[in-house]
Image (cartoon, rainbow, N blue to C red; front, top):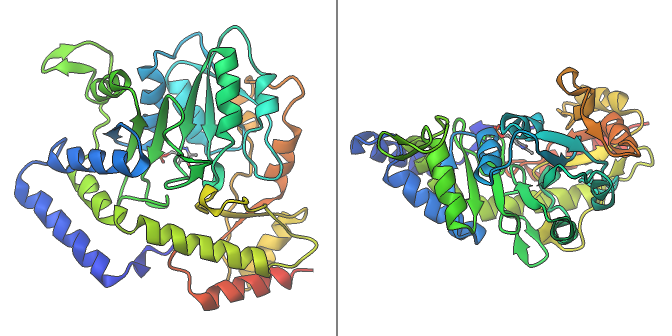
Length: 362
Ligand SMILES: *Cc1c(COP(=O)(O)O)cnc(C)c1O
């Protein structure tokens, strides 16, 4: 699914240079590298501010808390997402409410989300699942009508666009993960949030560093969620590669979509505008999913499932409120979805081999 040993030698050399620069600087936490990466990431996203934090999970928690969302509040989101989305909402003190998905994309459906509104709803957490931009226009309208905040979980969608807008610039705050497997990854845990609000950015800066507003002044009950200099320096080097990597991922996905011909295997539809998808994961749906996974494994093709258990079936989440009509489409998706290898270092031969293996499934 991923092979980090395939990083090209010139990139490794540049990363070693960045690491040496940090080591010799004698300043390892919240310094020049973090500040510069924050500027570069904000500018890449087209957002006014970026705040580096320790992980995507922390970015989600801090995003909500910076908007003063917490205990007693409800946040509408999707049951088809990384568990961290829901965990971030819970850690802010708020309660997730789960709406159904669009079966064509796996992404939260705006109509279903609307049926989840209550007088406690304070926000909608959009997730750009698998690297495809969620329908932010529809979400923005829903949120404006309901008087609630829109947040974006961008952990899978670095560089994707929703219409004219880059993801991470439409919601009041957006959370990013730079976990190694993400489209832009560090060599350990790292995350960030982006926002156009000076007030939200400064609240987030305060929260990530013990809630400290000035040295020894604690305006908030914060956490220790500082992005360290080493990860920021690595991210700055890799950011230079992001566009080329996205380009390659799109090529891989297009070849898969063109080449996979099997009535038993449905490829999730590609968006009309290629800019809307950065193909963090390439997902197919198959009624006999486990048989397909075994068939591929026997041909040397590794697969994963994103995600086999929808959030409300997790033991810790059985009491969550669902949309009044339930989430049957998310449940069906969880039974059939399978992620096929999709990353920038796949070779053309490997792509052909994967296509042939999928097409040979009977
Ligand atoms: C990876 C991921 C996260 C969590 O990020 P971490 O950096 O691992 O904490 C959150 N949401 C989604 C959708 C993710 O894919």
